[in-house]
Image (cartoon, rainbow, N blue to C red; front, top):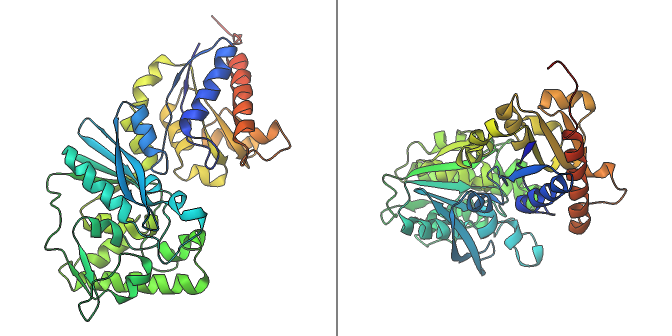
Length: 376
């Protein structure tokens, strides 16, 4: 019996590597061999997943969401560089966790990209989950040489508060990205503008009030018009692209740079060569913090289950709202929510989460190792 343990992170509790390790320990205690493959879908943990797949980590110093210098990592391997928002300028980089919906910047992501370019990658992967602000990608672009000015020519800071004042965009000193395949890996399909756009849908999650949302959406509209009159006639088309609204509009900036937007789950399964391991396993164990009705909409566990078929897949989750009759359509032969094993809230208790994952791994191992009756 051989099991592939391939979970995503339990957000706010354990990394994908920790989840995989604990499940593997439980399986081993039941006498079941396993191979660990920590996964990511383009959110936080994407660099870690690439490193687990054999990429080389490189430390970088960047500006966090509020501009404070911080250490982060990028991953480089086989001509590909992976850079993520979460570790450079995401929500977790906010001082004391205090939201800055108008002032958080994506500058740190751009600085990490600049340092990744020193490794001469053929492909640059931007993992955009976990962003802290809504700046339309101004920070990313500023770090690559774009400058933004108001109607009087005054240079503007790259943040959401500046969006409404942008009049011209100067790209004459932009870093050359010729020959580099830029990929945005994520699961967001929202456009940049409007009721389904970056500000309206994701702004409140970053601390934006109703007034802030209106201000930011109007500012993003203004930013698009500024690009259009500064030599980017396709700016509005870029703003309408599915995924342009990801990470507070960083997706829009990436499209202007020539990026393609792909499913983060599919992309990282390919990078980690998930399919190559399937012929050697009898069961796949996956999971993430929450499994619910949204999981079927391109989330990593269901994408994985579809790719694993006909190898059976079981899912482990911090919480699950799927009924038993929904397991099969989602691709799971069984679902193990941590809430079935405790009355306590595991989301804020990493130690309890670790213990329960080991216990569940043992249970999965004992169940999977039982010989099945049937015709020879």
